Image 1 (tube, rainbow, N blue to C red):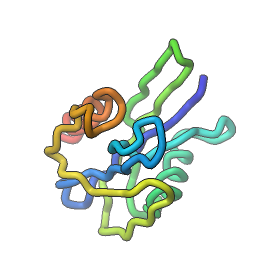
Image 2 (cartoon, one colour; image 1 turned 90 degrees about the vertical axis):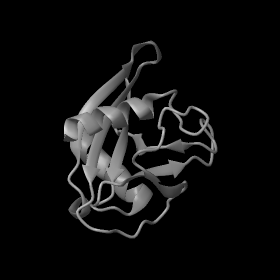
Image 3 (spheres, rainbow, N blue to C red; image 1 turned 120 degrees about the horizontal axis):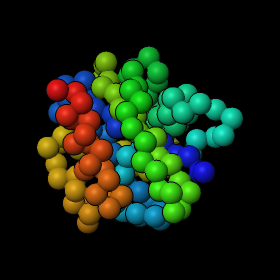
Image 4 (cartoon, one colour; image 1 turned 90 degrees about the horizontal axis):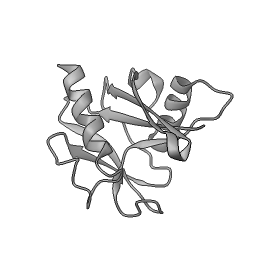
Length: 133
């Protein structure tokens, strides 16, 4: 099974979440969560921190990630590991490929004309909000 991760990052004040704007397909021009492929020889949490740093410049010392859920796409042989964390300080973002933007936490993450993933981003963020209460 091919494994991937997504990482939901909230700013220190919990008013915004970090999104990348896709520069290529799938979902070109749409907002998506930061993440990527999990190399088979590495563990998921370390891969999440690696992807986060590569795509944003956010270091392990800046945020404690919580391994929150898995989404399995059995038919396509894909598994998605979901992590989240709240920054412990303000950070300077450095873009790898995709443009990074802070999006208000009360945005409509179920808007499939704006957000990738056919509603999964909305589902993930709403479940995380419940977990953080």
